[in-house]
Length: 452
Image (cartoon, helix red, strand yellow):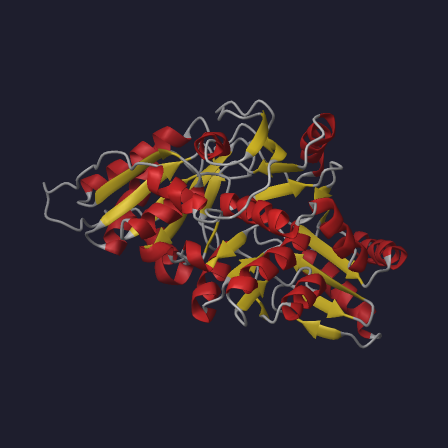
């Protein structure tokens, strides 16, 4: 059996790789690794998620670990409750934006610190994937206690702290939960906010009638943008399935690349924490660096991936971190990512500046146009990447290998990285206010890759 354990989470196909037996054994192994304590467990809206969560909890309970259930929720709620209850760990059953045939687990440790292969997942994998019996953490017959389901009120109050006392201006906002988990949370926030919400695909639906909730896919973007235009809304928001990411649309229905929000949110966070550190990922960088430095902050690069960001956020005590994939991390949220705090922070900043997202983002997009992430299926990703590197080396660029290959020239730069799980190369290109150059370089690199 192929192991579904990845670099910083667990995901695989149902039922071949992920099933109730696997979930039960994962619970046992997590208990053996963590020792006695309490573990928060939540799940997303997929058809098999409740059963997987039940098996996971049973494995923990039978091993002598107490379980704090959240029920249907977003991943960030598990992060919140893990820190808020001083639990030993948090486990979320979710496949997030993966295809319908997938499921998996996301894990954090005490204080919502990142679980990695080094500190947890490697040891758990060894136990789960072996044929040996997994040792109990308490004497045989001493079971863990299943607590009542955790109340959502503390989490909602934490979200509202982002905007409490601020002079929020009324806005009409299109909200697309993608039939994922965001809808019920938005309903709880609604009565406290001066916004008119236009809700589409709002209720969690395990049949995923509109396909997997992944607003980053080109074919998924039109629905929200068209609704913004039809309702003459000020803003559009779309969440992925477990709503740890949100994606924004301006009043013209234009999808805003997550890259441009990083600098925008960084400036908002730095106003309250002058001189603080902000993390960014190496795929697209120039806009972020300029905006952070303009605000008096310190911009530092971090390898792509939520576990890497959570870990470095803590080590640097960074006030904020942002990835172009729309994962946004906040120091005052246990250094974790939140798709709810993100849009609330944007709404608060638009109110403070008395402007629109279209106006603000238009300026930044013109200053640093980018390609967005382009994926190439290749027979040999390593060979294709080396071919691109060799071709451009003659131009004497600055070269970095923080995450894949980054090459920086005077007026343009690119990042080319291999997927950890698929035979893909992922390309991002940006320029300094030169859209024709952007198109030309994308075409040039694409030709080099497709030679494969």
